[in-house]
Amino acid sequence: MVPLSSPRFLVSLATYNERENLAPLLQEIQQALPAADVLVVDDNSPDGTGRIADDLAAADPRIHVLHRPGKLGLGTAVLTAMRYAMEHDFDYLLNMDADFSHHPRYLAALTAGMDRYDVMIGS
Image (cartoon, rainbow, N blue to C red; front, side, top):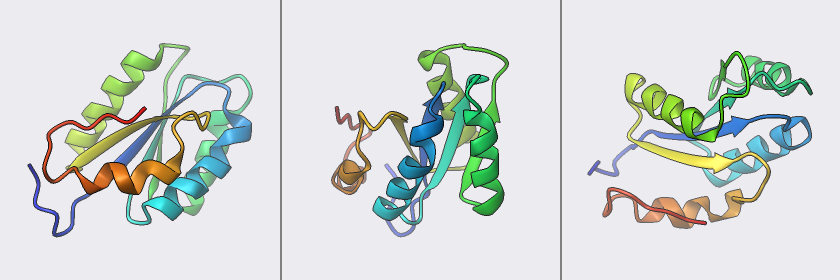
């Protein structure tokens, strides 16, 4: 377990056609966890989600984007985020859906117990 002096949090969002949700979701994540970075793993969304993610990332160094060549699915997006978190020395990874089914208002409560447990699940 990681000491909580200054843990690095990464919130990952697997996206496919989430153009309407992405900016408001990122704003709420940053309000809930201001120090967290966010990784958008986009599966070549035909609605332009990846392009919007790039624009948001260009304006905020805490936002990162990985573009995948097609619709590869949630499971492999989570694995991609895990690899990214390890390669970039994040202490904690939080995977969220990009459609607000996992609302950011619960992030503070979820992260509060992370210093005591190896895995926490909120659904």
